[in-house]
Length: 108
Ligand code: FES
Image (tube, rainbow, N blue to C red; front, top):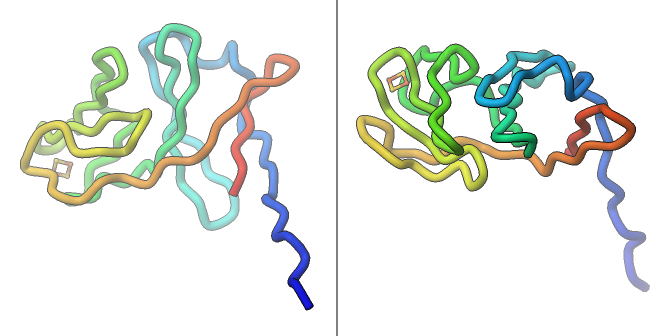
């Protein structure tokens, strides 16, 4: 017997026009604290917490699809979560984001 497919939960985060291109917004949903990024009209979502320390990625500087933590200057690619620059060593978690009817959603 096979298990039924696990269906993802879809969460509406915000209106897309709440985030200017090149900017990020911090949002909380349940246990999640997320950073939502607008990269030239394409939206990406990661955990807000920097994997290196107490930095909040939504308060960093967004350069294209690279977010620079404002605490020690470490960088992550917001599309992949991969580390771009030290001192960060551990990738940041990303979420599958979609825009529908002017709102940003993720699946968890
Ligand atoms: S806390 Fe983000 S780079 Fe150190």
